[in-house]
Length: 175
Length: 210
Image (cartoon, rainbow over all chains, first blue to last red; front, side, top):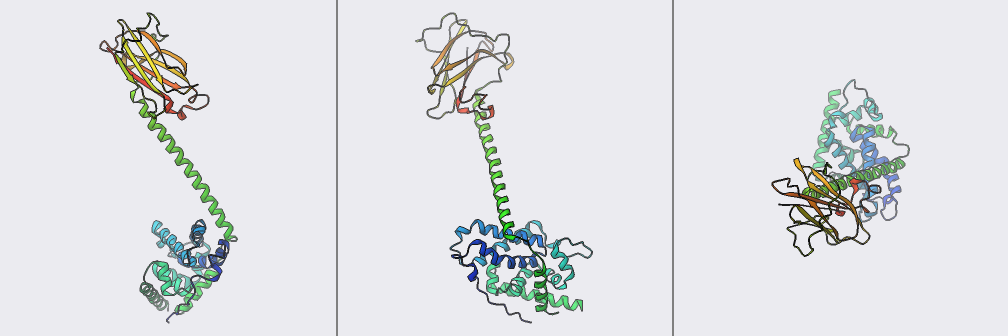
């Protein structure tokens, strides 16, 4: 099935830099970013940590961001950079694979253990998962996702295609 | 289960997880913690740099010093007789002392003159601000690298003093002297601990006369 990325404006009215306060921006964006990071990290604690770090970076620069037209893109780029740094430092990607019998203490890990769809998503490589979450769940198109990830649009397409192939492979294996 | 179903179920699973109760308040608390940690870090780094700077300056000052004073049996007040040589007599040895080395700071000068079995010693402290009170220590180099205190006194913004001391010929028929002057107002131990002394208000000079 060919996913049709939903076109969304990168500068929604709700986060107009000239009108909205940071708190309003935070209220408009927190849940969505947190959800995306949940699916990327597979951990509630890490998702909160990365999301807070990204918003904190923006809060500290808020006075200087009035010339940034794409606040939402800036937020996601900041969060994805934090996420990549986190994994580069600690090489936590391997730990995110849910090992059989492992006691899950994080609330989202418990959900992931029950929900096979989450397990499939977390079984992708980090780059594939980011591309799939941004385009397939959060509604960014390939160009926007490429801008957020700092890669070409064609690279995002390739990563999404690889993720789909992995899904198909896993589904057939389960059957 | 197809791809879209996988994504929808994963999204619903993510939505089902409760986030922070008051995420904005949590963010503000995190900002406050970060600021506090930055202030603490800045304070620690600043203190370390201050201590390092004092250490560097102090070690530079100590280059012209010998080992610390070891008061011995020879310690005592300076001998004052016979009278000093005439002021017009040129000293045999002149040693410029080190204070802070900056314009406007005090400068110390030590003059030694051989007058037979005695040494005429004169020190001059230039550039001392009016009202400054200086504590002066004069040491004679002694055996085994030690020093004997031959004078200690306080001077209030005057130019200097004259002393005559007996020769001892400690080292190859030479006698060595060291003078230390410390502004006892800015470096009052009761007001300012020694590790915070203003080292530009501590002067030292030393030399030998044969």
